Structures are given as structure tokens and as C-alpha cells.
Amino acid sequence: MTGIYRVITHVLAVLFVPVAWVVARGRARHVACQWALAARYPAENLAGLTPGTYAAFTAARTEALWRHGILLGLTSGHRDAATQADLFHAEVQRAGSHELALHLTLPPAQSQHVQGVALDVRPYEGAQWLEVHGGRFGLYRVYDNEWWHFEYHPNGRPQRLPHPGYAATRAAS
Image (cartoon, rainbow, N blue to C red; front, side):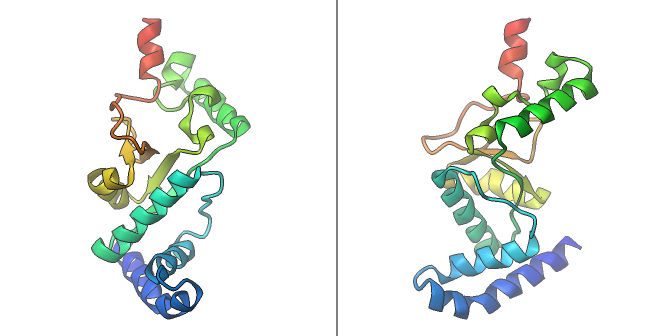
């Protein structure tokens, strides 16, 4: 099924190019790609990302689609502190402890989602593409246990960690 979505999204992007050329001469392929991906992922929300993160992500997904035929969608980007706190508290309840919750999520003060520089991407093939090519855009996977989580680091690759709360759980030991 993923292949069908990929083909349909690519065809849409091609069909959108003439209109995008009128609207954004010189950036028509980029704009057409964003329109096609918005049709494919209508619930996606790129609001709240920092300008650098937004630019890097949209450039990466444009290249992924046009050069490699790969879809790159966003499951979650920016989250406000209250939403992040709710996610963290729910994970504490599910996992049974603060320390175990840190293996999958972080409190608002530590979450890069709250800062607008973290991206949870989909599908898996898109994340694989970003793993290989994302560095050219400053986008890096930062946790071993989260294939979907990438962060914008324009100054180079950050240290890869086993899980989101690694530093906190290590300090508590």
C-alpha cells in the first residue's frame, strides 16, 4: 500500500508543478512537493518548528520525493509544554516510574519538541532515508530506540544516545 501512496503523491507533485511555477517561480518543485505531501498527510502540523528546522525538513522531504521517490511525513513536531507534560505523565503511569518513563519521553524542560527542533517522522522508509541523507540538512536521529525521532542540529551530528532519558537515568544511578 505504501507504494501506491508514493506513486500517487509523486504524480500529484508533478501535476502541481505548473501552478507552483506561477505562484513561486524558481521554487516550483519545492512548493509542488509541499502541496502534494499536504494532500498525502492532511493532519500534519509544521507550525511551531523553528525557522531552521522547518526549512531543513521541507528541503529534505522535497529531495526525498523528487530524487528518490520516498515519502517523508511528520507525525509530531512542536509540542507546547502542557502537551509534553501530559505525554510524560501518561508515560510515567504506563511505565510505573519516572526513570522508566524517561526511556520513551522527556519532561517539557528537556524535550526538544517543546523547543521546536524535534521531528517524529513517518513512514519507516522515510526515516531510513533521513537516517542516510538527513545530515546534509542538519537533521539527525539522536536516540537508538526511536527510529522516528530526528532533531535539527545545524552545527553537526550530536551524540547518539540509547534512549531519551539516558543522561538523567545515568546520573541517578
